Figure: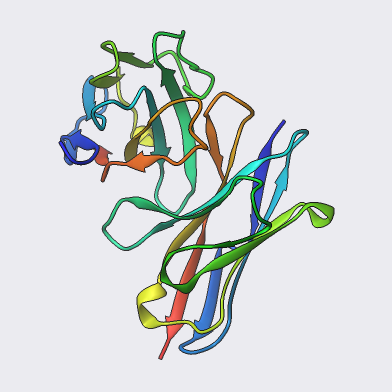
Amino acid sequence: GAGVSQSPSNKVTEKGKDVELRCDPISGHTALYWYRQRLGQGLEFLIYFQGNSAPDKSGLPSDRFSAERTGESVSTLTIQRTQQEDSAVYLCASSPGRSNTGELFFGEGSRLTVL
Amino acid sequence: AQSVTQLGSHVSVSEGALVLLRCNYSSSVPPYLFWYVQYPNQGLQLLLKYTSAATLVKGINGFEAEFKKSETSFHLTKPSAHMSDAAEYFCAVKLGNTGKLIFGQGTTLQVKP
């Protein structure tokens, strides 16, 4: 597609349930990022994939959070046993790669509400 | 560690007035710096970036930012605010050669008629 695509755009779930959020990056982009944006707050880095290198998971807030990426394409962010504090917009971004000066192309986000 | 700090979570200006959004960075190496904008109900988009080519960087919609190494600053300015500039603005720094971007907390710009 022309841009970064995220699904679902909105997800409402009950506390304790697992959720999966999907990101389709721009074709050819080797780098993929996940960020979390809580209401009224900035972007919190979660995880970064660069090609076939081991992902940088330093931003994942707990072991309930995990992410996978298939090659240089789709990524899935999984949150297990969701808590109310997980409510946020989860943003995915991609970029051409490490040699790039760093411009990220963002999707419109997946809004997660945990009841 | 590299980081960015945005001073002021909310800035309010009158239409036609100068816009100044502040960003200070911390970096042990020459940084790559960015400003992103998030309009209401839209995704983030790049406004401008500094990659060491020129200290004064011009971006879209009349915005510009000046890299000042001595002040470790990268403030965003626009001479005359327009109502359509109302949005949230994020400063970001790229960490070394990793490609990883760290964002500031964001500044919400309100433009009053």
